Image (cartoon, rainbow, N blue to C red):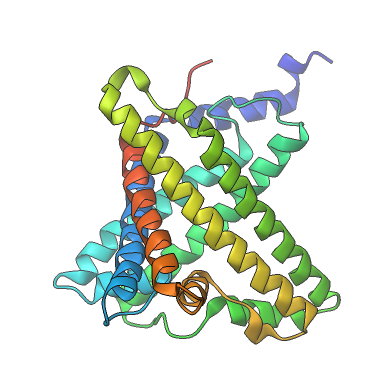
Length: 284
């Protein structure tokens, strides 16, 4: 059967057309901006903890609670929530389709990349749900969600193995971020013809610094997940906030935390640059 005329192809064509709708691009750009706002707050609070005697590191949930506690906080958080939903939708589109035409969909690297997009879609959907609960006054960032989920998985058959495998995968993601920062291939996604040379330079430097900081944090999170599985103790697991606190507790901790915090702020600005200049849906 001719693939172009197959029933499956006929069904996919309208879906791909919908995925290329301009609203998808608007949601994606809004999503990158919302992600930048969240990471800016995480980095700012961590920098405050590193360089002053007040404050403590927090995670993305804590950043949302910081927003809702500001004047007009619920309105501001509602705007951020729309962006987080948009980002989750964009990640879902990247999972199912290839709007950026990055290569063969059946290659090992592309399959791994699409799995990463799927996990990102789930994570940001959960973050958006947390934001909705905070707006409704039924949620709180208290507690460690990473420890809760780790405990649930470890209570299942082969749960320790799954958590240990997840830890190794997260460590691998951390190393991949460090590699991305070193190679700076993320620049390929920018609309260079719309950027001045100074903007290109800043995008590169901020992207490298920010992505490297995320790589360090992911590596720490993955290490704690692996240790939790190894020692059969879910309380060993750490999320983003726990990873930053761990950095602060090391020798020269304030300096380490301060550098990573500045890196997260750099990543937030890089996300805003992505919101403006990233090529979202590319024509073939």
